[in-house]
Image (tube, rainbow, N blue to C red; front, side):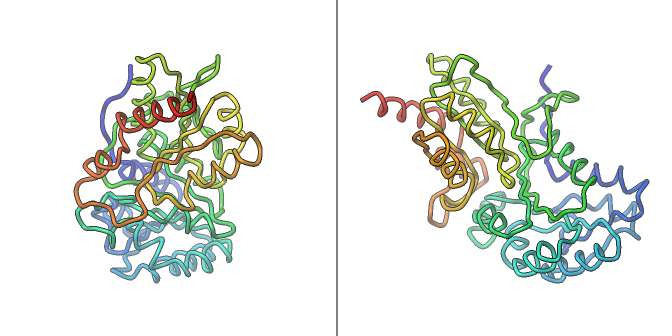
Length: 320
C-alpha cells in the first residue's frame, strides 16, 4: 500500500545523518543560521560537538566545511539553496570541487520554496550553475524515501556533491521499504513496455505531478512513461536514450529556469544519440509570481493537469 504521509526531504536528511553520527564522530553538520529552516535543530542539540553554526555567512560556511573535510571530517553544509549556490559559488567551485574535498552541500528550500519572498530567495538557476562546475555532482531527490537512500549512499563516498531539496512536505513517490534506488541511475517509475506516446523525464518535486499526469493521460488512451532523474549530474544518459527511443516525443519537467537545467541536458543527449522532439516544461525566464510553491506550479502549468495538457498538445501537433 502506498505511503501517503507527507514528509519534507530535509527532515529525512537530518534523520539519516543523526543515525550515522551516533556511530561516526567524523560526521559534522554546519549551518548558516539555518538549523531551524533546515530541520537540523535536533542534530545540533544531540551532537553539539559535531555541529558548527557559522551564522549568516554562507561563504565561510562552505570554506569551513572544506577545511574540516581536509582534516578527515565528513562535512554536510546546510544552507538555503538560493544563497549556497549563488553567494557561495566561488567557495563551492574552488574550496569544494577543485580541491576535491569531502563536502556535501545541502541546498534547502530550493526552487521556489520561498515563493512569497521573490526572486532574491528563489534558486531557479542552481542546476545550471552547480552542474557547470567540474567535479561537482548534482542531485535533486523526489521524495523523503529516495532522499534517505541518497544520503546513505553519499555517506559511503568522499566526493563533492550538491543536493537540492524543497522546503515543504511532499507526497511520496515510492513505497516504504520498496525504493528502487541505484546511485547515479535514474528510476523508471512508470514504464510503457509496448512503446510510449510520450516520455516524461522529471526531477525533484516535479516527479509526483509527472506521475499523476501520466495517469490522467492513460485515461485518455495516451501512453506516457515517467522517469525520475534525481541524478541530474551525472545524468543517466542510458536511461534518457532508452526512454526517448521508446517514445514519439520527450517532455522534461523541472523547477528551474529554462536554460542549462534538466531540459537542456536531456536535449543534448537526445539530439546526439536518438533524435526526437523535446519539450521543456520549466519556470519562465522572468521573475516568477509570488505565492506558495503550489500556487506558482499551478500558475505555470507545472502540475498534473498542465503536464498532461502539454503532452496532448504535443501529440496533436505531431500528428498534423
